[in-house]
Length: 87
Image (tube, rainbow, N blue to C red; front, side, top):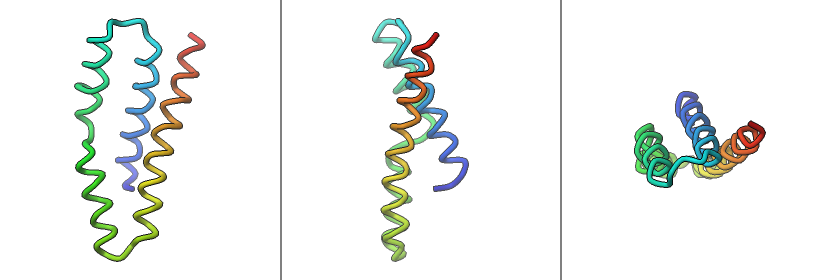
């Protein structure tokens, strides 16, 4: 995973954790989470990068990329949720 992609994903996950804690109307929450944050990256970019690694024979790197992307995103979201819960 490129460093800038990881930073964007972690930022996005933190913001999702933050907005998940706010008391804003569900329509606004969906707008920010899917509309604004969803514009940073797309699942198709993730799929394309993963497919490239598999095609080039880097199966181990592809699997690491898949699991590290998912786990780090979920972990960052949960940590942000816990942090913003304190406020």
